[in-house]
Length: 98
Image 1 (cartoon, rainbow, N blue to C red):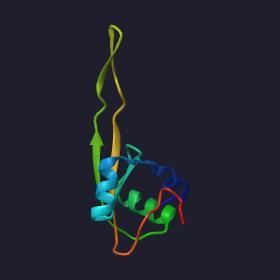
Image 2: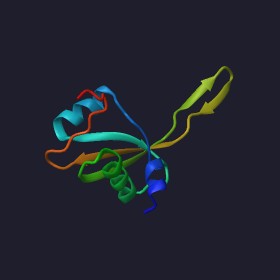
Image 3: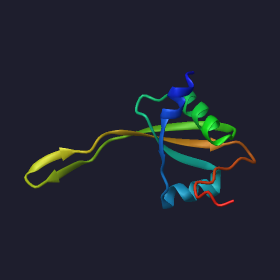
Image 4: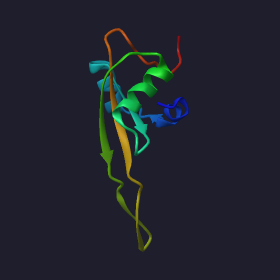
């Protein structure tokens, strides 16, 4: 896989109460990824960017919500979310505290 493509696959980490809970309990981390990203690409991208060993990847397509803007109806964009499970002993620290 092209290293330039792998650097673009992960858009951002999703840090919320739910993602923090599953990170503590299951060593799973949640990322917003490109809509056309595949599981092998996500695995390689996480291993490349964070220097960790990935045990598994689960993905879900999130539909954009229909919202009202005054009288007009609009729709938020659809996006893809990846749940990445790390191997035993590996960890990702988003806060940067050493």
